[in-house]
Image (cartoon, rainbow, N blue to C red; front, side):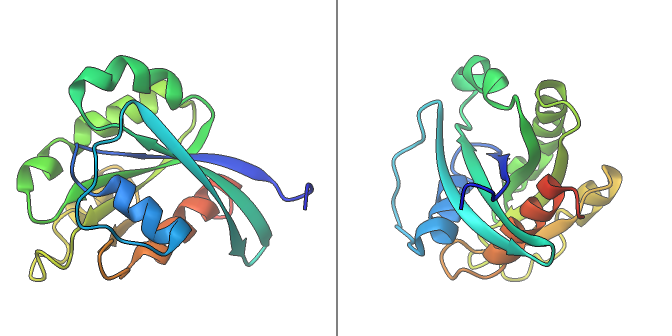
Length: 167
């Protein structure tokens, strides 16, 4: 078990876009309707099976509030990949993705990103809302619902593949 490579990945975006819910859905198989805001940073681990073999992800959940920016900057260090998450039902969160992208790039050398539109269950007609931003930064785009689980495994598989250098 100790020979499984460990890779750090970050999940970033505005507060209340569902970052913690996505991580909990993937790692624990749970969804809670109401959540307490993440204070600073939190993390979980999960073994992911890739075609090239197993990898262990250390998944860092970044607090989305502006007041935690100073804490977040150091927490990106060592991240091999990052998910930039926005809320499909709140266009303002998509407009903030360029700042999240800049923050990740500035604080994690060589980080690769995946753009994630979450809360598909609340905005079913919005498929593709973040694709143009993802295309503009050369990143894959995934739409998810932490509530239903749709797209969640795909998101974390993309992160794992990027972190392992196989995507």
